[in-house]
Every structure is written in structure tokens, then in C-alpha cells.
Length: 292
Ligand SMILES: O=C(O)C(=O)C[C@]1(C(=O)O)C=C[C@@H](O)C=C1
Image 1 (cartoon, rainbow, N blue to C red):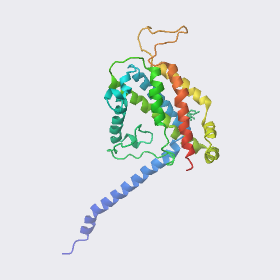
Image 2: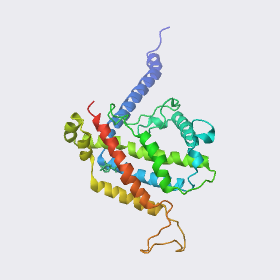
Image 3: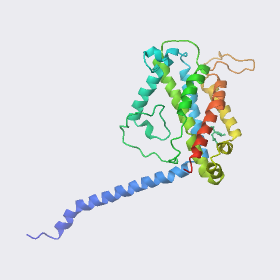
Image 4: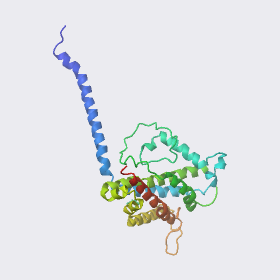
């Protein structure tokens, strides 16, 4: 029996709907990709990367304040304590990084593990983080230096002597400090990329000559460094003071409070001697590969 003229167009309707839906999906994902492509180059400016570094200061200051709740707790750093090759802190960091890798932490190019070998794959669906770094330079990092610096020098400057048995808590606090420092310092890759995009003509000759000293000079802003050191010292004063309802805090002869949880001068020194120089080193090493 011949079908009525209305029947074929009715049966086409679901196919038309799925076709329209398909077009809509393709169009919306195209718009999404365009947004990512559009936003990344414009979003990466010297102001935006400096905003990121400023916000990271809060995380660093708070993480040191948290670690300072516990004494040094030397068994945390002693491999013989576990009768093996790893100290409790190294065991803690390796195991935590494995869990965080599964949860997708290292999909974000801002995050770099301390022990990248043999990490499990992420179990979460990939997220399209904007890829703003130059691929040949993106893997530059100084995590090993940060690790050694933290345990050999920094920790002793802001923890009290002693042992209260809280080794898991000290190791957990150490990892938060390490991750905050690493994120800040290795963000030098993004700072360098922003500076390079601003004025490639200034950097290209030094990159071609592989002249690290010249790059260091170009990257340095002494006035900005002073602002950063003073601000982080002030944050240590504000975040690390005891909050009381009465005026029962201790003061020095100038009337300044003295009972901070982490000595603000340690923060000034940490930034002046290590954080800023290492960030600059990352910036320079990144740029050395910017034309590879
Ligand atoms: O803000 C910049 O221009 C940076 O490169 C960052 C930074 C820093 O680590 O805080 C590093 C080098 C400059 O001399 C000033 C500051």
C-alpha cells in the first residue's frame, strides 16, 4: 500500500532532530575550543601572572604557619626509622602523589610531582587546561632543588627543636609547604612565557646566543622584588599574629608585636634568598628553550 505524503516527512522527523542535535553539539564544542584558544594568549599577561604569584604568597605563608605548629620531629626525616631506604616523609610524599595522580592533579600544567617516575595514570576524564607553555620548554622545573633546600635549610629556620611524635602530621604539613613552594617557583615558566610574548624581540638575541646571564638581566625587576619581599613579610605579620580580644600580646620597644607564629623575617629571607632567585632561574631556563 502506498503511503500517504504525510508519512515519510513524519518518519524523517527523528532523523532531522538527531541531525540538528549533532550540529548543535559540534557548534558548541567549536565555540568552547575557540574560547579556550582565545582566552589563553590574552589571559597570560604580566599582570595576571603577578596576581597568581601574589595569591600563592598566602598559601605559602599559611602552609609554613601550619607546619610551625609541630616541632622539628627528626624521625620524620630519618630513613632508619622505617628500617628501609625511605624516610617517613619521602614515603608519605610518594604515596600521596600516587593518589593525587590518580585524581588528576598532574593534568594541570601548573602542578609538577616531586617523584614523577612510575606515577599511576589519572582515573578522571581529561580536562582541557589551556596549553599556554611552549612545548619544548614546558618541562623545565627545579623540584629537586626545592626538595633539598626545604629539608636542608628552610625547615630548621622556622620550626622549634623537639619531638612530639606527630610524624604523619609533620610529613603532611611538609608536603603542603613543598607543593606551595614548587607551584610558585615553577610558575616561573608562565611568567617567562608572558614576558616573552610581550617583547620577543628583546629576548630573541639572548636566546639565540644561549646567554643565560643576559636573560637574567632582562628578566629582573629589582623594584618588583622588593615589593614582593616586603609584602610577604607583612603577610607573615598579619596572618601569623595571635588574635585576642584584649591587648595581651607582647611588643618590642617600638610597639611592634613580636609573638608571630612564623618569624616574618624568615619569609623575607626565604623569598630574597631562594624563592625569587629560583623563580628567575626557572624563567631563564625556560627561555633558553623558547626557540627550540
Ligand atoms: O614579577 C616579575 O616580573 C617576575 O619575574 C617574578 C619575580 C618574582 O619571583 O617575584 C622574579 C623576577 C623579577 O625580578 C621580579 C619578580
